[in-house]
Length: 133
Image 1 (cartoon, helix red, strand yellow):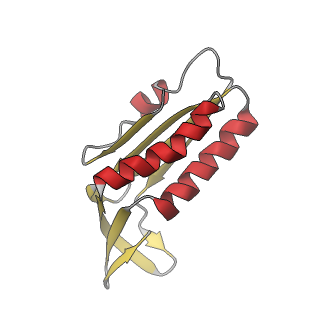
Image 2 (cartoon, rainbow, N blue to C red; image 1 turned 135 degrees about the vertical axis):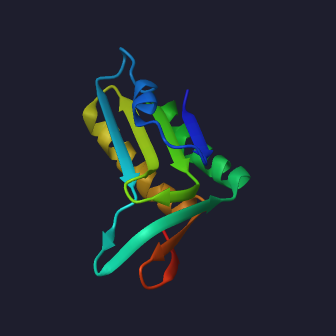
C-alpha cells in the first residue's frame, strides 16, 4: 500500500526507504530533492513551501494508485514550511519487481508531482523573492 505524506516535519529519508523494502521487489529507485544554493546566477537563501492539503493529497493518490495497481509500491513525502539550504524538500520512491519499471515510474512521479500537485514554492534569494516550482 502506498505511503503519502505532506508535512512541516523534516523528511526521514532512511525511514521512507525502509517502507519500500520487500522480498517481492528487485528494484528500488528513489529521488530526493534538496534546497540548492545556486540556480544559474541566482543564489537562494531559503525556501518556504505551502500546499492545499486536501487537493494535494488527492492528487498524490491519483498518481500512486495506478502504479501500485501494476504491482509496485510508491512512497512520496513532501515537506512544507520553512526549508534551509540542503534540507530535503521531497522524497519519491518506487519499488518494483524490475529496475526499469522502478526508474520509469519514479521519474514519472516526480515530474508529474511538480506539474500537477498544488504545492507552492516561495524562494527567497539574495536579490528577490520568487514564486515557482
